[in-house]
Amino acid sequence: MTGPTVPGPTVPGPTVPGPAVPGAVRSPERDVVLSPGRPRRRIVVVSRSARPIRVSSHYPFWRVNARLEFDRAAAAGYRLDIPAGASVRWAPGQSREVSLVALGGLMARDGRAGETGS
Image (cartoon, rainbow, N blue to C red; front, side):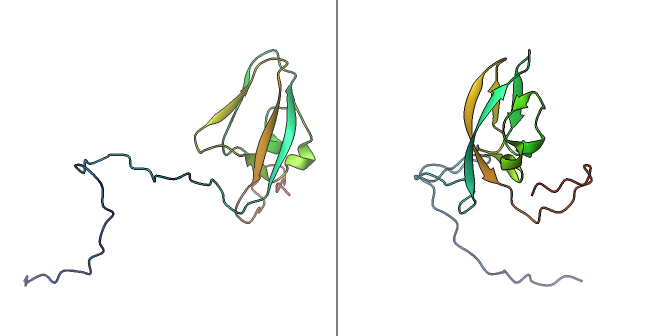
């Protein structure tokens, strides 16, 4: 048995200039701060590999390829401070300074040899 439906509360949506198209990408007309309020640090990283090394945005930085030389203790609990899905590449012998941002969450054990990242 069905009866009349009662509409739920309505919330005005954002106004979009021009036609609204499904799947359209909209972005604010201002800069967006990535990971606001999280601690950051800069470290110098040198590649000792004979091949290029690429590190993606959310990989725990202290666990990256052993042929990247840097202060791993300083990087514990941090990841690259770059947008999601991006990566940084080191050519053989290349040195670069990178910005790291603290990981979010509880930093609980994750099953990798008892490492916690802190």
